[in-house]
Image 1 (cartoon, rainbow over the protein chains, first blue to last red):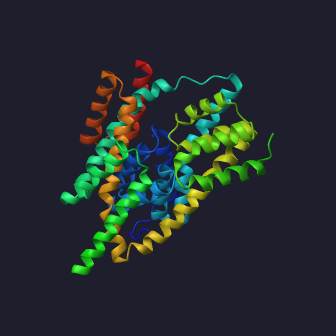
Image 2: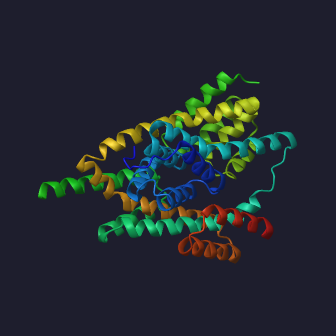
Length: 185
Length: 172
């Protein structure tokens, strides 16, 4: 839990994540980018490092968009905060899918929402790129860091490797590194 | 109508397997919903998949759609709660231990060391999404405007995204 003086209210947590769950079209990294903007930059609820640690865990453990919300909520207010953040994030999608399902099974037709996504997708890409640049400036130091970032990018884009495996590989590399550095010092 | 208890049990099991990685979800749900229980035809399943991807939630929102088919609104609610229950619980456990483990030197330096890989994966997501959806000059123009707004102004991302949705509706 955060040891900062101010306690974030559960209502604030709920509202912030419901807003993210309402507008984060594109899913996955779009959500991550939105949570970063909202919780790290705007509200200062969690540091950039802690947030990225949560993202690393979240990518190894299944649906990472939901996982970063749970992680951030837990960081703020413990178990209750985590549950409230998860519910807040899922609720808008749940209501939307329920409504669309009802329309679909009643009229056997899907509403034309795909057109809207043609506008939101490019903007989402812009947001993710900006977040990646901001994170990179802060977190990638020195040649080894640049190489690791490029290797992870290439492994995902060109080799189509699962993110969980890439992160496990990076964790092993990093563990060996810190072990050796300890030995030497 | 399938009983809510059956729905809860089915989705809890799917949720447990889903923790291993999101990619197994589609073949798994297809097998259970279409072949085993015959709640949906393959076409309905694929329509549901498209519909779930219209929302910000994870792909597993497919549980809401299939649960709705199996048991109406209560079915949708139960399916959604139970498919996400295992990963939320797991993430809470991770969060609890994270605060403790972070204080151990070798663990925190290992975690910090892998951060560049996380950043690389974030960038890769932008690339993969771009390959799929940047199909013309219009899209590149919207991307450029979005990038500039996020990079150099403090405007709330929500407004930009909703605005872009309206632009998409008008243009297409």
